[in-house]
Image (tube, rainbow, N blue to C red; front, side):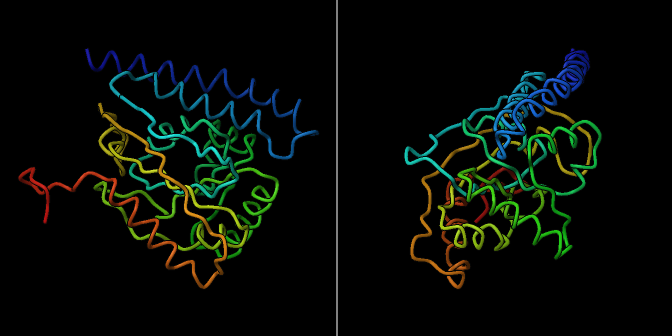
Length: 248
C-alpha cells in the first residue's frame, strides 16, 4: 500500500512540475516588464511547493505563527534539516526570494522555475559568487522584497542546528531591515540528507518575532547571529540519544 501511495505521489509531483513551468513562464512574460521583483511567478512557484507537499499525504506539514504586522522587508533565516524544508517553507504567506546553492538552479525544470521566480543562486566557496548573490539580495531588500536564507549553509544530518554563517546578518544590518527567524523541525525523516528515501513525517515551520537591526553596525553581526540562533535553538525539540531519551 505504501509503495502504491508513493508511486501515485511521485506521478502527481511530476504532473505538477510539467504543468507548472509553462504557466509560470507565462506569468513571467506578462509581469517582468512592470515588476522587477517578479512577485507573480515567485508566488506561483511557492504554490507549486505547497502542491508538492500534498502529493504524499504521510508528509504532515504545517506553518505556525504569523508574518509580522509591521510588514517587510525582512532577511528571513531558517534552519535546514532536509530538502523537504523548501516544500514546507513554501507555506509562508508572503513572497520572498530564496538564496540557494547553484546546484539546485542547474537541475532541469526545478532550476528553471527558480530562475523564473527570481531566486538567487550562489556557488558555495566562491567569494565572487557570494558577493554577487548578496548584491542581488540587497537590491531586492531595497525594493521592499524579503530575502530567505539558510544561515547554516547546508543541511544538518541529524536535525541538530549547525553553526550559522554571518552573511545573512551582515546583509540585514547593511540594508537596515530586521531578521525574521523561522524554526523548522521534523522534516529530516521525511526526506533525509544523503539519499532519495521518502518517509512519513510530522513537520512544522514556526515564525518567531523579528529581531531589529536598528542602530547596529556590521561589527554587531556576530552578536546578532548568536542572539537569533539561541532563540531558534530554544524552539527546537531536545535531541534524542540512541536510547530515545533527551541528551544532557
